[in-house]
Amino acid sequence: MKKRNKGIKNMNIETKQAFLSSAISDISSYIHLTDTKVSIIMAVIAAIIVAIATCLEAIVYNIYCINLYSLIGILEVLFLSAFIVAFVGVFFFGLLTIRGHQSNLKCQSNWFIVKSVEEYSFEIYRKEIKQMTDNDILENMAAELYKINDINRQKLKTYKWVIICLFILIFCIVMLALLTLLEKFVEVFACL
Image (cartoon, rainbow, N blue to C red; front, side, top):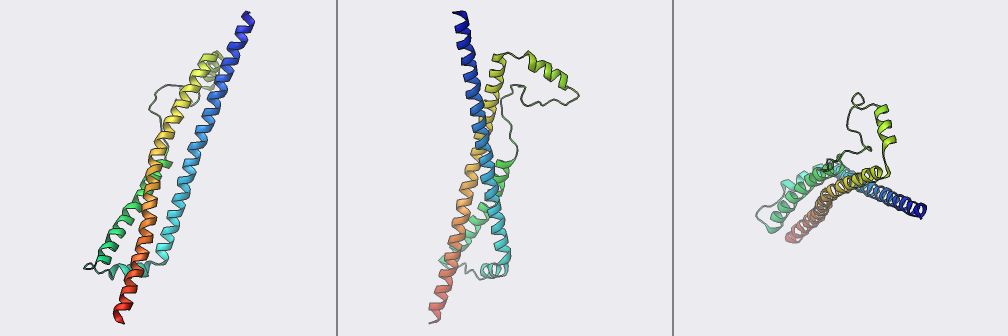
């Protein structure tokens, strides 16, 4: 009977370890996916910078030709201002998302060593690992899962703002293009 209970207990520990290991892997993948998405968005922003640089003369000419006494001119200034703010926002929140994050949990585990090699040698580390019990391993895994979840939450908060700023940026580009076309259309019909 005792062997059976011990077998069930070991299986329970193995199940918990498998669960924690799988959860850590999944959350780590989500973090990498978020970083990849933000990197792609930053590449899109770089492409927008290249497009702006290519059409810089026409853009500057259109900015100088904005009639501030017309509704179209006022809308162009508003959308241009929103474009600049959103552009800076994408970069700012993108960098905040990609940068390294730390969890607020101050629990020390044997997974990530913050001490220097001089303070914490490999022999000490190996000795501590050998002395770990199944419960110590579960506690280490649970602490790391909690830390990774906290980091994922931090990244998702700033990623949300990257997406909002990107949406505003694209919306402003479309509106500025439409307003410029509308302004040219009005000029053409005014001459007729």
